[in-house]
Length: 245
Length: 331
Image (cartoon, rainbow over the protein chains, first blue to last red):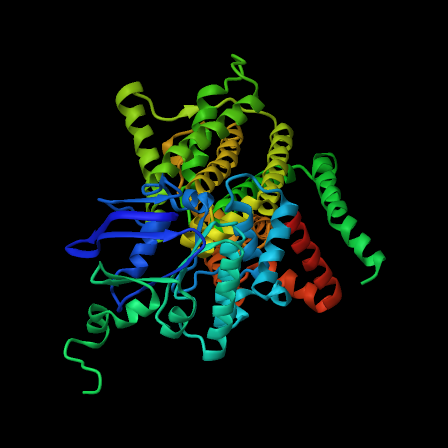
């Protein structure tokens, strides 16, 4: 059953169609991947889903309810949380305070101070950063900054999590750790849609992949199908590539 | 980490605060004549600086609209407060002055708080000019007057009322800072987009705090008007009341609540002292002092205290910080 679905989603920036008539869906409980070359419109699509940019025509439904036109804070409270391609953490604030903000404001009902603190502590523990809860974010490594961002998103108690290149800039060991983290989040019952350039990670954990190119969806399917898809290979490697040539 | 330090720390700060308030409240009884009006002026600057910091400090939206809200309060008071007629008691006038200023702030805020950075600052600056010109136009073309006389009140009454407003301002600023909205405002200052995506209704948080800070500016204006006898648009909407609170807050340090308080005290007293010692050079000396503070103390005068605290005892400082973090978690 789809938890998130989009129909004819379109966004123009001036004359450029950043996202063009895209239909998509994400099923409850899956890890779906979104890939495509640079400038394909992946992050723009995330911005449309999370409400950062208004768009028309087209519509996006979350659990059957139309969400386009809503402000980001409303969408977050409905249960869609996200991270950012260039981590947007509050650099001078301790990790705990960062996560606490999500716990305080990200839920539809008012959370008491004690509950928010507990939620924040648990989220930090879940991503493995309990020891650094008092450390200002700017003193953390990139990997850990990304983990704080994930913890902050989790503290809003989402049903769906949008991960925008959480693995960019990480080394191989860190990538496996991040993959393990993403799987654990899904095991908590949170549906995941992730944009990623690290193919090993995408192929390793996604159950279904969508491919965007020049704002259009050109393919969709399992990892196997995508890896063999002619159009996808063309887009990534160029037209006249033959195996073995 | 012993209990004694902890408890003494716990009662020390509120104790000192109560002592200060008591000393200030009894000041008219033992100070020389002339001191009370000076202190009233200093307290006025404290309110302006603290209420400016309340909004602009954490959010980083540098507002130059303080004088507009201050002036709205002044004019409200000039219209409503007439001693001979006993139209309204002064506390009610102060309250209404504040409310009118915050209504003004809500309207303006809804329209302009979507502007960021320098654009917001420029608009807030234009707002002051707009308010002044509007009233000038109204007086010139419609009532055919210029300015108004304001009924006056006693020196001590003004001082006590000002003290009451100061306490209310500081208490409000403290409660906001400690609350979840304080955290939300910090988030807005450090990354508005991220805060928005964490479920913070940024528009509401900004507009409401802007209005609260305007309330205290307007209330102060309404009170101060009664000491000025005569006001006109140029006096009421004076650019100085936009810049001074900002400078005081920055010199004092916007990181802590006591920063703008120290800044306002230092600034207002210095101004008074320099004017009587070196009337011709005071702006020059003043500018020099400001430059030195800004260059060598980027965290403001308050950072001196922080530094001193760190040097005095690392352990107590840590305890204090830890306690603060805990408080934050408990809100």
